[in-house]
Length: 217
Image (cartoon, rainbow, N blue to C red; front, side):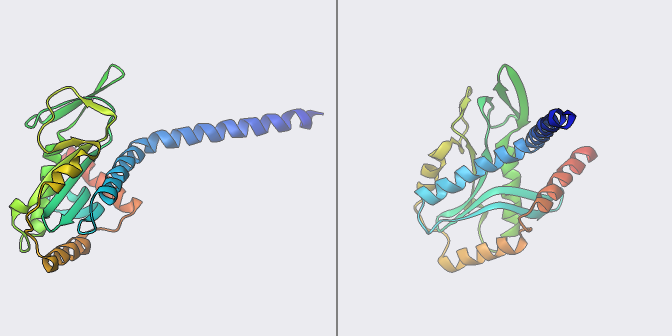
């Protein structure tokens, strides 16, 4: 009789514990998953709206002198230039200008500060520029910041900042071929040679490098 009562009770408690642990794990990894979904959307834009002459390298972690590593969401290679893309999967209202050090996200009456993504991507661009110093002139590297459509800018959207798939039109506006096919292949090989392995270990290393740099400042 007692087993008949306690058995289902323990079974229910087991499921409750499982759900609680699952929700806790989801909460921990939610920012990472959210970022990955934004990056996936941009990579899908490239596949759907750009031709085969455009090559997308996703989630590129490269060595960097000051931080140890830098992580670039997307590097888009094309005969018309190289596009360094930073993705932001934020909701709510966004406030920020080109020169502001920190931008603001307002969501459910709460405000959150985050680094100006243009400044963030400028650092990415400089790392890539140094890596490709013997292969391409700096003026052929272009910065793009892509926000997902769910957010709304409450300030004037700076140049090179786009929502949703609008960034594709910016890329397509470059029509003059500046990188020959053979050199483009060498550029791709150079980047892929320096890239760290795509893994959770690499991601954790990059996060640890960022924390250490922040603590040392």
